[in-house]
Image (cartoon, rainbow, N blue to C red; front, side, top):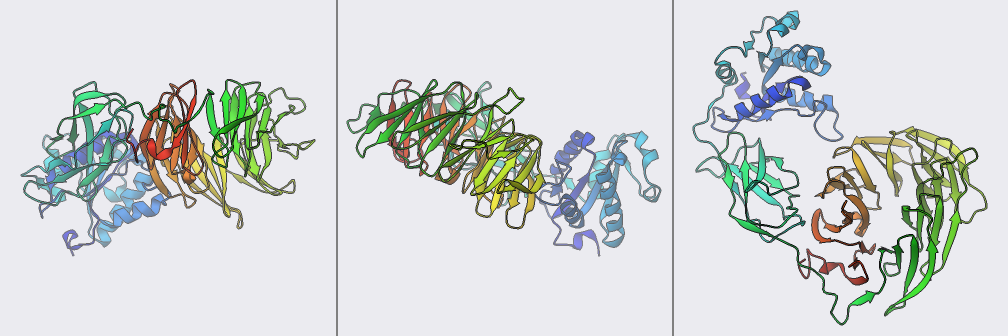
Length: 571
């Protein structure tokens, strides 16, 4: 049986290389995509960018083994570093065994003459192709059964960009790649987008892989208004495409404050909804005021003063809590009552910073960096965790405490019953059914509280800077403004893109609706992964996703969320 007899192959070429040689490997990858196979299609080429197992949560060795067993040829890039890498040695020896058992082609490329002395004895019998030869790429094409493409596939834009608003995420944009005169496109490759004329900024994921001949861009946005904008799509081996011109318009000031039936509060500051979705707490500087909903209007309730900048917010079953950097905690109820408590520093420490807040019903627990855990209203602390507190989850007499040492400790009735090593930086925790989800800077950790089994998965974005754990979806965002929302099974349900340095300021509808605060103080509403509304002042959304409160810097306006873009009146 020859390699062309295996119709079930997923790949035509598997490129085996050391991380240090990625640029050469990518150049080879792009050059081979300029070719066609014997049946006239673009070759399917496996290039593992991460070098550590491609899919999130997949066993890298099983994944690579499957890719090797389902390829027609393996191209090994011999370099001095190639033979120092365990994964490269494993791939090379697996390819050699498959060459003998399944007739897979093994094509070594000698990238550096110094690498020749490192080739294992058993593999010296396989001739390599030195890249110092003038026409070495032609030899590689011939060895792989590829030929130069006669007609380059054409890139084509799908539906027009439509109504584009600065700061708002565009609807998903599709670019297809198809050979001239044919409907089907190549199965592999990447498409890259850029904006013209030069100087117009385009944000989002600008390079997307082709899947069945189509690349879908789902998080594009233009930060500023511009006229006569065009998008240019390029891909290796394809004829570039340019979109029809369109305008990026500035967002209209919306909604109107002058409509008679609008509910306006003559207060300024940052609004925060209580769990009932009606009562509001407003933080103006360090003064927190409660505004109780009477059924037709708001009535001013109690007030409380913070001593420092707010650090943490939390909602209970009915009440709301805020803690500042000094250790002062304010608890507020929908009827306007407030209670203040200044938590004392631990003995022998001067640093008195709250690390986490957690409600069990309406009982508030406060965990401090010093390691003290307090129940609000109790005369003394309920727990002393020597490693300090980064994250905290309370449920009856059971407390889950993530320490500054990166360990998650399970306490029952004040006694440690289990401990799990996570990572040094922990950003948030949520109890979801029988599981606890802990978001770290590098990984997501899911603890089965019944079986005490721990599952750890690498984050689908770069080092995470913010997290909003939720009951249905947990949202995370990195320093570049790229974020995702995932469920308790750690499956990514929504991806979104915001500006670099943005922070997650609130969520609703179980995490499907997000409020994002930009570094300049403006706020944005992200709905199902798309930014649909941007405002220069604070914005809050009720937990049920029905109502929103927006500020103009002097007062607050209550209105339906549907009017903030995406549905109803366009923003």
